[in-house]
Image (cartoon, rainbow, N blue to C red; front, side, top):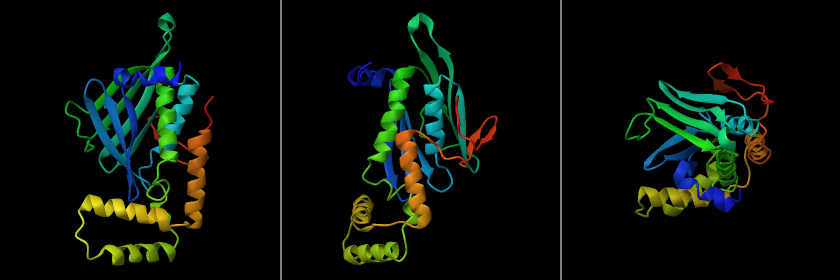
Length: 228
């Protein structure tokens, strides 16, 4: 299938994409036809979904079922791929997104449930990883927002506040300028931040999750990341 053919499935089967990266949070938009959608935000420190999504993609490539969930207090976000089908040479998989007690904004229920062609869902994952890797606010706003190197990070923020303190900016305009200022002036991260950035680049380009990341699954936490 060509990319043009895959793009035509967007409003037939749905999709997910990067919505925003801001102050240590990544927001993902999930859309299911004809008009159901939700946005879910993940914290870079406590609720990072990227390693889990990389592993879901790897399982999809190997035609393996997979699931993961992320908890934040009493809230729970859950993705599952299951029920592969090859009937009539139509290679498909069931893609499920569940949201429990999450401020999801879903109008009807708490679940997105869609049968998708495997090739198309792989394309959606690959597009998502590429969008994150090439997002102008990666890795400044996510996943390294908390890892800007001092004293540079403190100095940059102080300079920004001094420059704009007497301007009457809307909240949206303030955030936009603050993010731009970080992109233009932050040149280094902490040692941990540099390691994290490099690990994310590997995950987003080679689809490899470093061993040691904990991925919560129904069968228990996963820390070894080989899928065969």
